[in-house]
Length: 64
Image 1 (cartoon, helix red, strand yellow):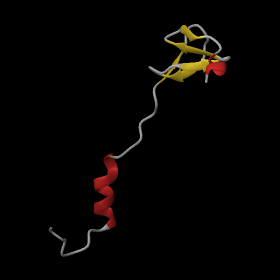
Image 2 (cartoon, rainbow, N blue to C red; image 1 turned 90 degrees about the vertical axis):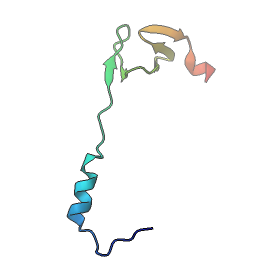
Image 3 (tube, rainbow, N blue to C red; image 1 turned 120 degrees about the vertical axis):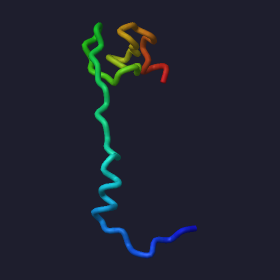
Image 4 (cartoon, one colour; image 1 turned 60 degrees about the vertical axis):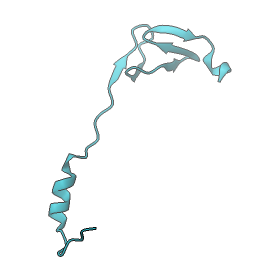
């Protein structure tokens, strides 16, 4: 296995790591409830589970 003869500087290390960045999560507004949630995810609103603006499970809080 190869080992470097000289130590890499912190500037060189940081240049290599500049591409590792967090991206903001995509948010959307549910058309029926007006709730802000992550895109393509089901969300709970007032105890009910909604997905794509449709009621999937009523009284979801009791099921879980």
